[in-house]
Length: 383
Image (cartoon, rainbow, N blue to C red; front, side, top):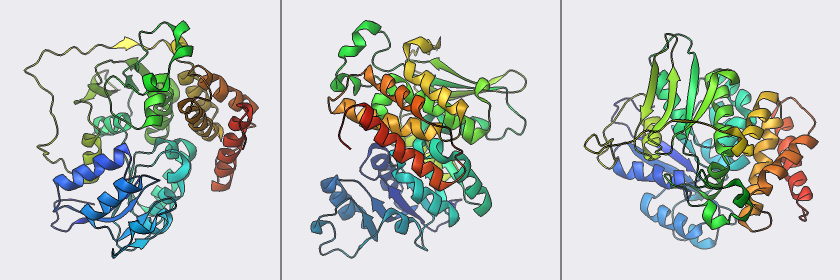
């Protein structure tokens, strides 16, 4: 990992055309002498991927049903994401995909001893104990990129004693002050208008239901070995305090910065060093700033309660949770179900799930597949 060496770190970005992927490449452009793009993987945004190939000249590329123009007259290989991360010259993998697509590449990279910067929280929720065990066995670093886990990680650096609790913050989303009776009429366009963050479609909807914050509670439990009863959430509309950690003596450390994902991305890519980036905004002390912190009303956010409950049950329940939510959000975005149908559909799937241990990749993948088919079936959609 980068530690002041003149050698460029060889980087693979999975999900390069998504929000986190694009911002990762922005960091690479800012520090062209520190990173070499070895591989780029994307979904179906062929035009953007092609422009990224032209700009960064990676040695390998992946995309779904790649058109010939992607590699025409270019000295690059078409590889699967699993093949790409296992190349012998890879130093760092940024997992910026969403859903279950990042699971196998994450496992393969960690098994090879490669540093994984993980922005895909579903991978951690689905298989957190498994990938932590692989990371420990191989010695590979598993570094959180998502804003809140990154903030907790930064607050914990330098602390050797057990902590008392973690306090996650949530903006409350675009419907924080909306009459609950009106939520059934919320449109996808409204749900995608997050008040403080610019993110991909699924995570933006998950932030409006607070499912995303429930995911982060599970993520914090797994990554930092903190019991669920010692993880709290507060509403913080300004999105400046990204997380807080209460230490043994009752003092609290907070990570504060403008809401910009490039900061946690940069922190992971350069770990353990801190570097100055003139393109990132800093906290402006010359402007009066409110930092409201309010208790979370869980009754207002049924998805949050579902997520935490699934995390406490453990086993494959968190896997089923993420898979069912992914399908439900997609159905909402495509106008097949209403906004308030999301928690009802996910809850129905969870109620139908029989507990299984998440101690093998086979069990995890089976639960994921079952949950997707079950969600579609309960929604009356063809499979």
